[in-house]
Image 1 (cartoon, each protein chain N blue to C red):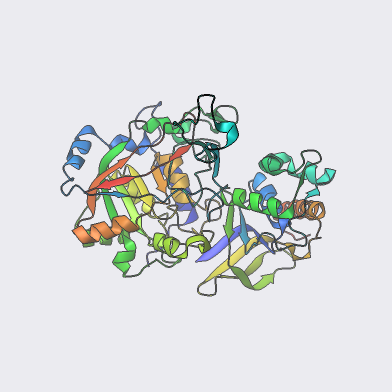
Image 2 (cartoon, each protein chain N blue to C red):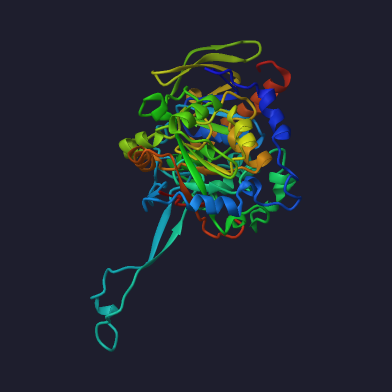
Length: 169
Length: 318
């Protein structure tokens, strides 16, 4: 079987789930692979989201999902781990998002023109051929919560543009 | 292995398998219309040994694998501190006491055994029978197709099709998806045939993995389940409700735009009632012990007004 998804997200961190939720808000089916919550620096230290991150998370109700878990309401303040755990469970319940834990993408190959990704999805027992129109890899995202959210937004916008035009940015 | 239907074919089933209007414009029962009074009477005759078996998992508070949000328990009163100074009344130590709690949960997801109402899913902005999705709102919940549609419960014939047993494995591999051919082979092995108004329970064995791995169980992974090809089969057989030890759909389903086709086509187009995350290990053991795979099935949702389903404890009676 070929797993064919419009958007593949790999790399973990809060940015992966922010990107999945924002992409879902645009009705873009998304596959999140291998996300582990709390893996970043100072995962339990509450930090305030900056104005750009708040503006990015407010549409599509993402900030509403987080609101019951905020340590401080204004500016919205929470730890990266809480951000990840809450959005992860919400993503799993989202009918546009599939979350696979404990899997990896191997033999990844990205077409430099179209941005189309081909690879193999594996749990080290079975292998599925994987095709994605676009990929967001969060391993290079900045460590700060607001910075990573803002980067996720920028990446989703770029992916939407890529899918519309058929060309990687 | 059978050839899976194409994405175009699956998408065409939103129309071809649609039950919209079949039982009237105001219908709220969907495939439960197949369940007749005569069917209930006939199902009651399956009770011969007087044995009942739960098909549900325990609901536990705190973070659980597969739970969308951790179920919360807040004790309003407990048995602690009854001898404390401040709790003694003017008339001396009180003899009466009691305990009560608040429970909060999201039952949808991969943890709690639950019934999906026909308000749970939308396709192109519509619910079953063409009701607009906007009838499910923050303020009022589901104004149409809430779980009150089945307030009187579901009492009918249940049939367990044990595909893991058919294959001779503990748990189906994730890429071993269940096709109509498998359902029919399991029917033949069990000496039963699904009929209109029946509840079909399908076992992949995933419950065994969940039971053995406890808190280490990972529900967010590829896993077996009904392949989309089962949809026409369920439609043609007039199945009233399905349940399984997974969330029905195999994952990955293999489709770009509809990655839970059993849920999407089943609920929205067919009005098919789903019981996700059943615990079928005890039922499978009982069926094997008694040598029969049909029984009386009973399910009663909590009468939540405006809610898109209900945690439930389905019971099989032999």
